[in-house]
Structure formats: structure tokens, C-alpha cells
Image (cartoon, rainbow, N blue to C red):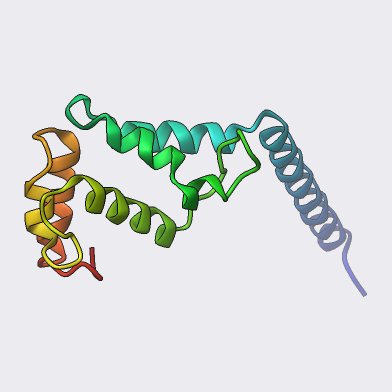
Length: 135
């Protein structure tokens, strides 16, 4: 025998669950239609890689085949796996540094022009103790 209070509580829980699922689905639909996730990711990557002294970094990142294949032609991906991100950064370092980043990551980062990118990558290189796999 159930009480009316318990029935009301279960009903309210069910309605809350149903409404939260509906709101989540609606938010996903709107984000997908407006490409908000892709725009936010592009803005985040641009702000992370924005450096007037190393402008090549952001532009090459967006045009790199590993990034370009994640979305239809002419569009930006809504998700970039960490492995792709790090592989693209290492590839750009390999193209633009005097040192081979796979042998000596700290020296490769040191050969970049001074700026935000160099400072950020230097901090990451020091945290991984110069190991390219950890970087």
C-alpha cells in the first residue's frame, strides 16, 4: 500500500527527469544547428595558440590534415582528441624549429620566437622533463 505523498514524490521525480532530458536534447539540437561547439572550440584553440611572434602556429594548426579530417570540408570540428592535438603541435614544432622535437623537446621549444606560445610550451616541456612522449 503506497501513500499519496510517496506517489506524488515519484511523479515529481519522473517529471523532473523527463524535463531535464528534454532540455538537454533541445540544448544539443540548438548547439548542433548553430555549430556552437565548433565555434567555441575554434575560439579556444585560437586564443591558446594566438601569438603575433609565431602567427604560423594557429594558421597551420587549423589547416593540418589531422585537424581538417575531423570535420566536413570547410567546417571546423566540434571535438579534437588530445592525441590529435599533441601530434599536430609536435608536427608544427618539427617544421619550424632548429632542433628535432622528438630528440630534444626543450631545445626545440627554445628555438621558437619569443612569445606566448614559446612560454606555454616551455612550461609544458619542463613539466614532462623533456620527454617527447610525455609532452
